[in-house]
Length: 298
Length: 198
Image 1 (spheres, each protein chain N blue to C red):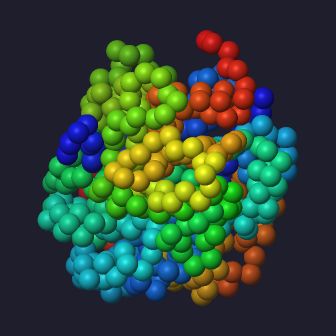
Image 2 (cartoon, each protein chain N blue to C red):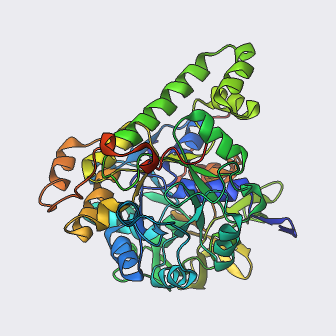
């Protein structure tokens, strides 16, 4: 929208908010009380959802957008940005979240996809979107559709960081490879990656994604958060890792501190002590193919 | 000249990149002792409540107050403006700021993210065309608590840029625009160092 030269919903404004969240931790919350605990611990934003991924796995059934009344209560309970999840392709859930006034929408594989072929046209919205990606091609497809922030998919609700590490390493390897390519080889790279050509050129020039890239999916300890930061992520999403640990307030604070000082191993040793039990976690190889969330979306 | 950017969280690399473009080496400041011999410090945009908590946990709040008292120049952008302010209208429990800039600031005063905007802004002291201001869940100043405060810009009836001696504060994000005039203004007029034309 434009009025007297004033424009809302521009890419700069959308990706700009993600830039302000860099170096911070975004925490999954299901109630206003959890949102306050997250804010007190130093979260830069909270993600409102009905059940954390660990519980979605345990309970099964279709996972949908949260009840708007709960999201509204969370928005009223904290002053930090509030994000909320919509199902992949469910643009009406996204419209409802935009009407509520949430600050970011996560078009998320953690919820049951509403469309197996098409993601949401995110350019059509004023509110910005974050989307998950396992590799560079997937990230650039989402950015092509209008996503203003990317995160690794990881394997949500497992407390196992291995998939997030795989996704970030894959992204970094592909960016390094693209940077080295002569210009005439970029179109073939774009074709093979299934990524928009212009965005491939941009990544080749800048040596990084054109938007902020956070880590998500399986982060359960301060050391996991610092590992993802060291691999080059701009910040951290923690889902089940906080409210499925034995002392959520302490775990939350420790992950915030570790993300800020991820290069300082002495401090990381300090932050990692006396936190009680981290979430139990799931070995990925014990999951059946249809139990994997990272393979949802394309 | 030694300039730093507080590097606890937020848009740190964006400010460092602008300083680099201007031929100035900026230091990413994470520890209290790094403030000791700085000529100027930028407090970047980020989440003000997170930044304040991290500053306290890491002992940077005390060191920063001391550096400001000895006359280190400082520029707060967005969350940085909130951190500098004496009064915060809608602070969360325990949020006090550094109390160095005698203004009352209102957090998120233009609304939530869907109200964030880009808009041309007239800024006192800047030559040329209007500044391409980017407001993101931006704060604004509602009250001036000292007549020495110089108001530099308004947006929607709120004050969005002020100068107070060696302190500059802006509600918006010049580091996202590619327009380096405010960074030059800070270095030349507030810190007081001449930039070499490149």
